[in-house]
Length: 166
Image 1 (tube, helix red, strand yellow):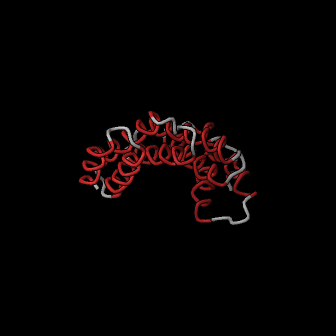
Image 2 (cartoon, one colour):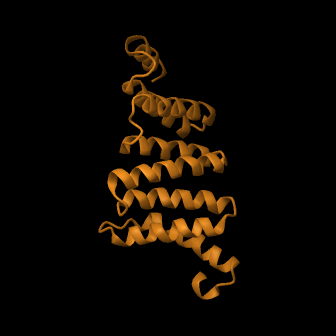
Image 3 (cartoon, helix red, strand yellow):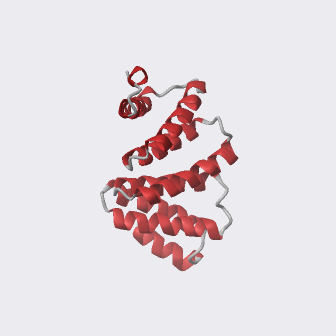
């Protein structure tokens, strides 16, 4: 993919959307191989290109922001993870609507980033809103729900709201 990016740059220039897509895929591969530095560099460049091309209000851009948030979260850079998750959520709500299940997935990740920073009230707000959306979806994916429920239970336990933590 790196060679493809070089070829694409030579033919299309530095700001082409196809180059951004290639960089996003390359960043994903780097991330899966735990090369977080290169993953961040590739996805940040893809985000820059999408912004230059006025594509920052499209759902694909939201997915790119969420991917960058995932990379930052995996290296414990929760401030940048939160920033990217919030941007993704904002775009998703505008493009897909506030009730779309993708918002649950982003809220879950955003809540986890807050949770890992001990910002429990922010995490809880994300989890509660995400659960509200999740309940409305006909195709519930319960495997994504268990960690949310565990974290909510921990938050309620630390707040001594034992009835809620069970």
